[in-house]
Structures are given as structure tokens and as C-alpha cells.
Image (cartoon, rainbow, N blue to C red):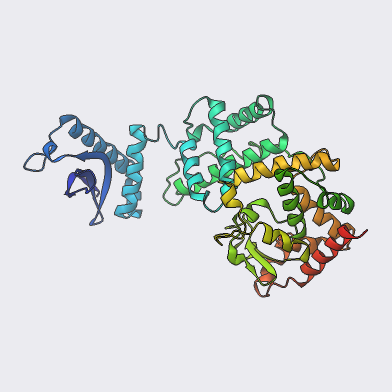
Length: 412
């Protein structure tokens, strides 16, 4: 049987000189000290160690009653819990009743927790998560959303709002809904415990006969032919922003579609001899060692590396000193690409075009197979995943394709 007692920890905090109030749970002859909202000064405690303030005593008594009621409702299931596990559950129950989780798990607060956990390793993904949470706040005109309020009907209404009020494309709506679903799935994994019958998120609104994500727009081709790539590479520029965009586009193309986040954060030790070896930011933490790629440094971009080298050696390139964040860097490059597009007669241009163009020229002009192009781009090799565990990576064919693609662009 679980028992409870309000206790005051004997040692004061070094920072605020207060004593922490805990509720001691005894269960299976083990003790766990459950946190409360109270930290008391010495003059708020009697000589016998009792709490002077009546309102504090009443609230703590109410918290104990909440815990006792929860334990009673669980019946024999509490035998499956250790003292600490039961304490975690009861702390959450008290928080819900007190309004800390306001009628349940707040989706927006939980989403912020997810962002904090991924922002260091996946900064661009974290930005996408923030964008979704802002859209939800705008939609509900508030900053709290109980997770069980997210139903099929709610999702359909939110989708219509993004289409009609935000004017988003089907692809953008699909991306936002995928992020929403990812946060929802993560919360279910964290809070639900089917073995013990604890299901604070019992409903799942996604899937067949429930909410279905909108189909993305058909992808428009971002591939440029060799002659256009050559025009970009040789385009005369006056402004520094144009020069930066041109240089980065050519470097990315020659490096088999290296993305801006990887260029921005590339470390100095990524460069050894004539190769650049790095972990792709887009798939870091998802594919293990398979996220690593090694690309030969062709002679055509050696000047780029020396031109933009970080003089202090903190990273390979100096861009992190010139632009405080990756977003600032990306925005500056995109502005330069817009100017560059006008000069070479293109309606639009982005760094994605470098990656798509490399792939298309490799396949269409140089005869590389789809699988070989996928290897150059470091796409996941799902059909050979098990086999790849037993083999050492060999970039010889990648190097050959890279050389052929660059030659195709530069030939007259």
C-alpha cells in the first residue's frame, strides 16, 4: 500500500537559502520524494519543523488527496510500479489537476520541448517545428492546445485554414501536417504506457478512415542543363552578394549537390588530403554511419576553399563569422541567387537546382544509373541496407561520375 507524508528537506538551497517541501511516497518499502511548488524560508517553518502558513498546508493536503485518489483508482496495477515510477505518475496527476498541464498535455508546450531536444543537431528542422507551432497559435488565437483536442475534425479545419487564410500550397500544408503528426507520435510514445493501462492520449486521429494528409504538389523540375550551369559559373558579377551566390552554387554543384547547412557548419578536420568527409545535416541522427559521405575535391573548386577558408580554423569556411546564424547565411545566398537568375535569364534559382542538375546531368548526359546517382547524393540504399553493413564504402564510382559531370559542363 502506498503512503504519503509531507516533509521539509533538511538542507537549504545555496542559491535562495530556502528549504524544499516534498511529499514522501513510500511504496514497496521504497521511498520517493515528490516535488511540490513550495520552497520555504526559515521563518516560515516552526521550531518543530511544521509549515506555518495554513494555505500552504491546505494545498499540500489537497495534493496528497489527489494522489491517494489516483492510487485508489489504479487498484492492483500499482504493484507494477516502483516507487519512483509511481511518483512520476502522481506528480503528473497533480500537475494536471493544478492546471500546470491545463486539462491534460499542452501540445504547444510539448512541441517547444521537442524543439529544445533537436535544435543543436537539426537546426533547420527545429525552425520548421517553430513555424508550425506559430501557425497553430495563430489558428487557435492562443498559446495552449490540449493534445486530446486534436481530432480528425480539428485537423481538417486547421488544414482548410492553412489553405484559405495562409494561402499555402499542398506541399507546404503536407509538410506542416507531417511535423504535427511527428510531435503527436512522440508525445504518445512518451506519455502512454499500454502495459500499465496508462493512456493519457487515447485517441489517434491520423490514418485510414481518419485524417489523411493532403497530397503534395507534383514536384517541378529544378534541373538545369550543362549549358545553363556553365553560364552561371562564368557569369560576370559586380556585387559581393552575387559573387557569393555564384561561387556557392558552383561549389555545391561540383561537390555533388552539397547543401548550404553542410557548407556552413563544415569543420576544418572534414578536409583531409583531397577529400571532404562530412555527416549530412538532413539525415544526421537518422541513418547512423550511412549519413556520412566523402567527396573528392576537384581542381575546379580548390580556389573556392582557399578563398573562403576560415583563418582561425574553427570551421572549414568563414561563413559562420560573417553570418550569425544559418538562416542569415541562407537568406543572403538566396538574395544573391535571385540577382544571378536575372543575369543568366532564369525565372528563379535556388541551391536545390545545383543538386538536381548534378543528378540529371549525371544520369542523362553521362550514363550513370539511378542507383549510382543515388549513391552520389547519399540517398538511403534501402534495398541493400543489410548488405552494406558487411561492406566498406567505396567512393571510386562517385569520383568518376563527378569528374564526368564537371567535364560535361565545361566542354565547349
